[in-house]
Image (tube, rainbow, N blue to C red; front, top):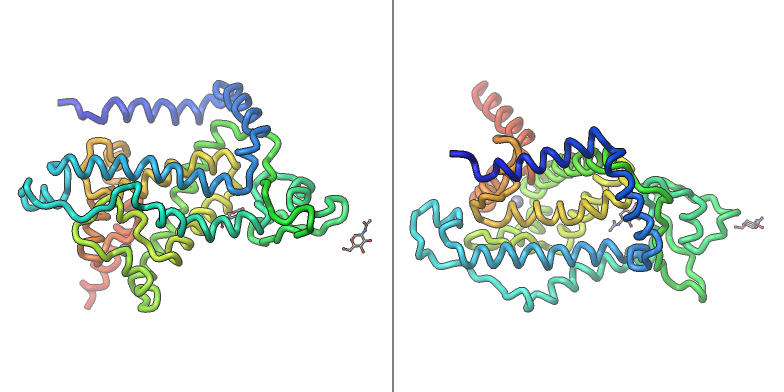
Length: 321
Ligand SMILES: *[C@@H]1O[C@H](CO)[C@@H](O)[C@H](O)[C@H]1NC(C)=O
Ligand SMILES: *[C@@H]1O[C@H](CO)[C@@H](O)[C@H](O)[C@H]1NC(C)=O
Ligand SMILES: [Zn+2]
């Protein structure tokens, strides 16, 4: 029997492969799109990414929640004890979760409206101008690690715009930056997550995320505000450290949100990203559910290699004793 993911796998492989090998094919479309984005006041807004992330979360998570509610046979917990009548965990209607959205948005908006956005490929001149500095006379750092405040004046009380790079990325850059940033995030979050479980102070913060019965899509965002901010900063770092193009960031958001919701879905889905990737690469909802149920292993969010290395190392040191 042919695997149901054969076709999606083929399509995904074709798109990624061609984007890597034939960037010239995609360039005209990318240029048109980017020309349009450059003059869009919504895209140029300093708050764009914050709202963009909320929009994608508000689309993806309710889709998963509905799937969870209406397909008990897909729930990992149901599969495990073979009881299709197992009551489903308490979940909240999407419309009742506005407050959660606001607590997510508030601290990020504060940053958006006070700090100068520093993206890869943007001339210092444009950065200065966007931050209300005199571009001909400013010693500003273009490096994202050096944060710069907006120059607050009566005429310009807030950082409302973000300076964008003048040209679009190639499709090859897009694919390479997207995959590298996901792999980098996977690594830094693995380390951070280990610390969240092993250090008592951090563990207190993280415990909120583990406070539930059966795991379900809504647990994705059941996070202490500090953990949520840390998560956003680490994602930001993973993009910045390789100088990602702003368009890469725009595509990163839906991909990242989808992956996060998928690993928390508690569902064994045909279309889970772990089924699309080569077998054995992805942690998927199975490993992450195991982590949420036991909290003893599987700290890596998206892939398997660091967890497998950790397991191998633990087994080796245990055998020595
Ligand atoms: C993300 O990184 C950009 C570029 O360095 C920065 O301007 C922005 O403030 C950061 N956002 C958050 C939420 O850290
Ligand atoms: C540059 O800025 C400094 C203070 O920040 C000021 O003293 C100086 O006159 C400025 N130079 C020019 C050419 O505007
Ligand atoms: Zn955890």
